[in-house]
Length: 219
Image 1 (cartoon, rainbow, N blue to C red):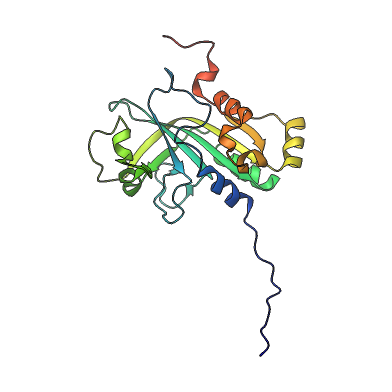
Image 2: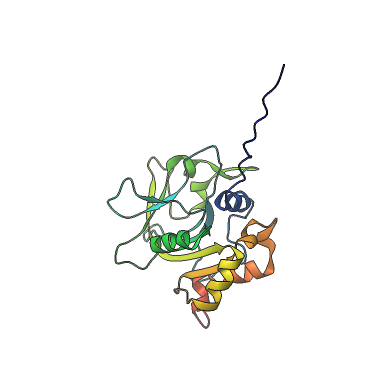
């Protein structure tokens, strides 16, 4: 018997997949960031979540039901005040080409329309840590009761970290100026094992904090 041997090459994971695989190991609070007077609430990693479920938070514009923004990485900072609910977001996007970068930058461009963060009920009811059964909603101080519908919050502050291939990163850093909410790093820094412990990455994300724009914060 002759067994046919496939000559089709195995598909290597895409840059996006490699980044998401790495980001699943990152902590619930963005590495390098500290609780402060500007962001005293709760940070939770929203994306990437469990690869087996689609019930993960997403971003959208008011009035839209189909067009959603699904960042490769998404961290949410929830307001601690139930009377003033909002979310700050830190997004991480892997960009495999300059065209991909332009497309993703356009999604977070300044706009007069409010961006919304949507947290599905199954995500709110699930534990944020495998070894801790506490559901996520109990960690969000602005949520007072067990949710029965999705938590939809206006986004107060947006910060985005883009990962670029090394050659494209070098060229962009030499010739381009980022917007105030944009940060950039080589893709390898996102896919590296224990990349969240890299001092340079921690320093970069510390600068992406809302507190970084002030000389000092009130005590």
